[in-house]
Length: 138
Image (tube, rainbow, N blue to C red; front, side, top):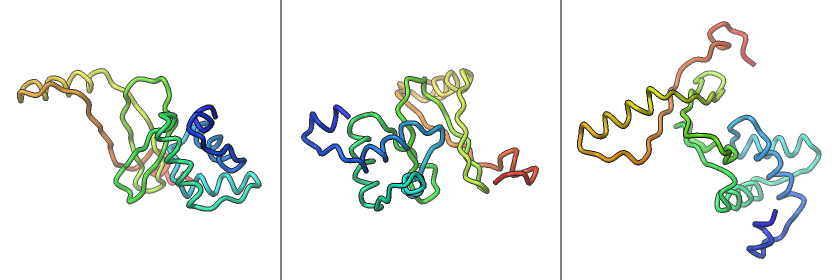
């Protein structure tokens, strides 16, 4: 946690546990899910502590915030992967990432046809995942 040391922030066991959960997760976690996971690993942590650690990880560039319109934020590690989109299940909350070059080209075409120089975009598709359609989720 060089970032913590460089910014004179304490390196605590709680911060390290929160960072470990967030930065090693394959899922897009909410702050509540982070607190639950840290607690399940045997370290009690308050919600305020989770949010402060999240803010620090966001500022450091190690974490990315996502808002899928659920009324709360989710977080994922800032990985060296190309821009990607998200599918969100409205029943179980599963988030699936995808990338499609056709979509990348289409957003540029749409922007340019309207006189815009595209810089970035965000697409979130809400629907019901395969498992929930089959009744096998959870």
